[in-house]
Image 1: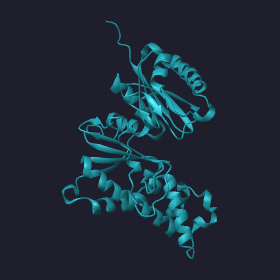
Image 2 (image 1 turned 60 degrees about the vertical axis):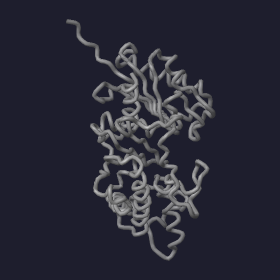
Image 3 (image 1 turned 90 degrees about the horizontal axis):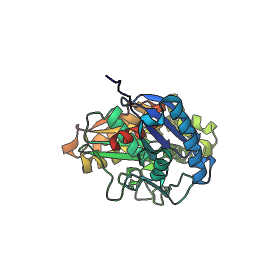
Image 4 (image 1 turned 120 degrees about the vertical axis):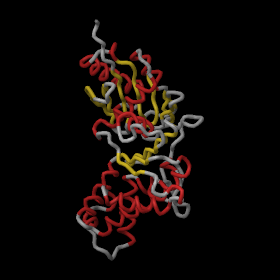
Length: 323
């Protein structure tokens, strides 16, 4: 009897700084991975040429293109329905980019793409904390705040492919912070890594009579990591920054529960690793703001995908789903 040939898929995650890609088996093991600099090429054709060259090398060295059943891509402003990346602010190529079509023509295999947070949600459902769940919300806390909403086992894309922009739900109507999307008061401006740094700067300015380790750092260079380190060392202002962040995020999550009644909300990204500094005020705030019918029902979980592989796994899961 002929030995069954093991199939693989490729996962690609296009970030504002790096594009990471890897070959993944059906169990979620990353066989091999590599990356290129997203910003190196201002012209999309030049970027694709480098990506094709480097990914082709990786495939030939590890499994051969005949064993690759599909390619999944996670990217900013990526539309699952059209296969296009549309007007992505953080990428060097503007306008509408027919990414899936170009990649499929290059490699001769099916290509599916979606936005990075949706890819993370599919990855979590396939390989992570949401295995077996049919209703959950994925929240990615990074430079921005992304989300993927799964209801009855299906990712919600909406009529145009862009559903699930919970990071741009307005959480502060009065004097809200300016967001890169053009609105004011978006969740992202308060609970992303950049939002945490922004809160720290505000607190340092408004509480000028209080000591803080953060005052040793130039105000405009403070990062969320600086705030975390200071909070770990007992700095009161830094701890209050996390308390405020948790409060705002908890209020928003309680609102999100109302429209899809998820079994769980899963947090992913660097900020989710802040432990009790964030989670304690977050859990309290969410429970305090839930309607009585939802209290005590919604789990708040951390992603179970390994950081190093999470972006690749999320994108690769899309390829298995679409194969």
